[in-house]
Image (cartoon, rainbow, N blue to C red; front, side, top):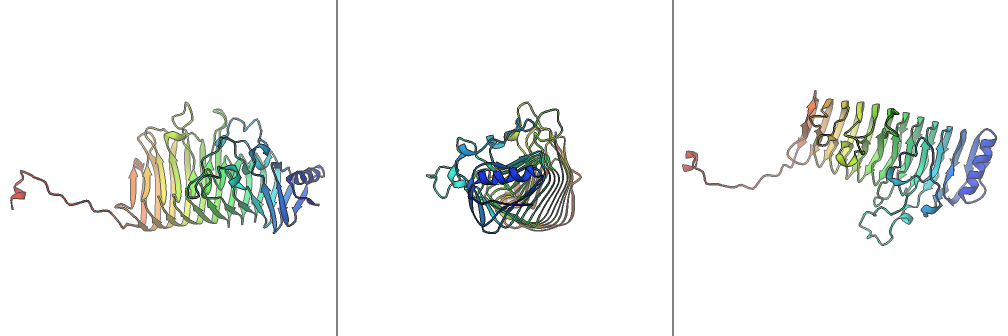
Length: 392
């Protein structure tokens, strides 16, 4: 059954969602127009359809947003915020569709006196995410455009069977933490035919541990046919205190941006208290990439003496690269990168080396044709020497 929203604020949207849920579910339709407000929550069997010409705006006042609360999630507060614009927990059969726009009006959350050429500083209050789902199943997000999130655009935590297609995400380059989609402890997620232009990472795989005794696994994520643009990373995988990320694939990806194309780094600054490293990443495949990067095309690193459970069996196939820095692989004696393979790699990087590799075991290069093109020549110098060679 269809439920058409006749009004211009999110309280009316929530009213229609509640009414549809009471009747077993239905399609809540936003006709063309502007709808403005703060937090509302989806429920099981709800299809929110945002028609072409409809703009759903989050008000630029953090005090009006509701904290997203759930006992299983309350121990973790990324970016020190529990607030969201659209939320759902422990729901199933949720759809957000249409050719309309969801706009976070991000500029209202930051200091307007910030010079236009500068990135905004983080404000002293919690900024909302655009969409936050926890323990939801059978989720479809199709066609919608997400504009101007003041924080992460989407945080999908402990969700299963999520299908995202044909969406667009734009975050202002001045906004800190303007991620695209954070997939945290999710299973069976597909992202396809979508466009990302973000200030922070476009696509993120995480396995954030909610407590020390509960396993956290992110697996079977499949991303294909997407265009990524960012001043930060195109794809980011994990942080050193995460749990397990495995069996994921990315294919047919274009990346353009000032940051790295693919990034998996475990630095000290991201370690939790009383943790010396825990993450395990394995069986990740990247296929058919076109990367133009202002940093590294691929960077996998583990700093200092951090001891992860493993970074292994990661493959890169059919890559066309233009980048400022080389492919960068650096483990450490406690975390040796294992079974990393590059197949059919071509392109150019600046500097004097196409690849940097330390503490890597079973590195495989097949048809590797990456050229370093701009090695900087040192200044020529003579020095006094007792050697007979200098006498002639």
